[in-house]
Length: 421
Image (cartoon, rainbow, N blue to C red):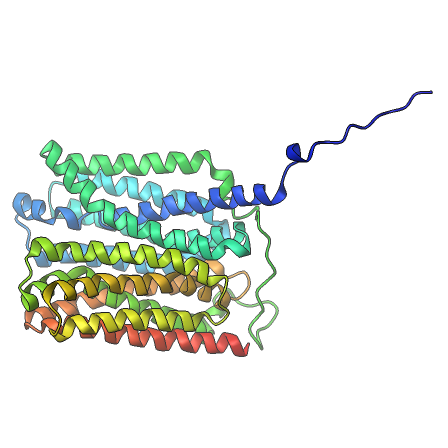
């Protein structure tokens, strides 16, 4: 009599679905974080080398400022339009195309013989920056497990801050090492190539069409028809309220990034060698806030309350700096610490947008909403620059705080609407 003996598989050798799920989530989050950091790195492709362009091409600051405007206009318009492209063909090919555009922007910068060449580099960099938020968030929302989305949004924000922090060090460092800003742009081109190669090799972990983390469909807004026009989401008040939230909070960020250093120098007599590090401190504090904010997302239902408390804290610290009452070093520390509040709100903000997006329109909604970021940068800088030209130094901080308050109002209205739904 023949008998078959089945040898049980030891528990240690059996595949652990949760561990495999964690590995896949971590890989996707890491790859998207790398891509987003690269986009912020190329976000600052031109400004760190403005002094070299003034020296070599005889350009004025107004001409250089127009380069930044071109970047943001193309990025903002392209961001809204690229959301439709992401929803139609998928996020992964759009993401690869954006990285190629960054490569071309770096090469155009390295070959620039004057203002026209720099304008081409700015336009290509803006085109590359445009699709990142709709592409990134579409991939994260479709591939990462719901319980880890808060951490995914946190890593996404942190990587962007690190990209901003790295760009000036990298570009100025290479320019000084080789005594050529063209060499710095060849180096940034290699960065784009390296990141593109890594993402291509792990492209299966970025495939948003083969979702690795199916989630229940978001509830359709009350009264919405079953089959909507692709532009129907534009009629949702929540979309434009999220847009306005980004506009106001980015206007505040623009004030800090561009004008906090000279304002602190004038108000408190702090040396520029010190105040220049305030923006770096703001970003690092923001990164810490994002880490903590990623844990809060999974534990808080009313996200708008987290956003309101965190952004209000940031606004209060900026107002304290604007009063002139604090000692100089304390004022600089207050501005840097304000970054913690904005960072803390970041993951909750991104999750709030996810909840506000109607089914099947993730790319379009993120593209439209995040174009508020570009609009805020493009329009706020001249306004705050005018305040500084008129020696209204404290108004830089009060204006930033006021913009944050308006952002809180927008987020609160969105949150209440979602709660009623």
